[in-house]
Image (cartoon, rainbow, N blue to C red):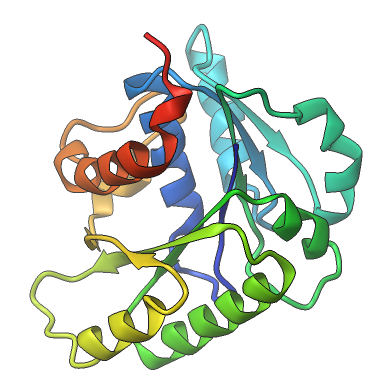
Length: 211
């Protein structure tokens, strides 16, 4: 299964969410996971390389790649029925290199916020994705949500996004997210992300797990 984590807008928390999902699937659910870091900063790959020096066996591999390189590596990461490939996308839509990546997606996870700019970017991302791949499931995750803020547009945004896919429970804004490594998710974070990932796993990925 190929899962894209993307949005046109930068700063939506794509890379952190990719890392947390990879840890959940590989460590908690014992899935075979490969992460392809296509984000310009390649923070996931850098974190993977840094942590790898300190630890022993990696729970999954992180591969740095550009959009242009995807067709070249696609065959080498051909997924089996019990493997998940997570692709952290760059925050852009104006690149033809996205076409084969979008077409390959089985599931697309789109983190977003409830401000107007994030909403518009998310809708545009969804429209473009749907034109290229009408079969992929889209899951929207309200991300970095502040507990003490009332979001006036919440109901309207959720209503519009559900025309394209499903909106999950929100993930709160937590500074300790940045301390998560490719080997471990901090115990303090687990209670706030596990309900979202459990829902995704139970509804879309459970067939990957073999006792």
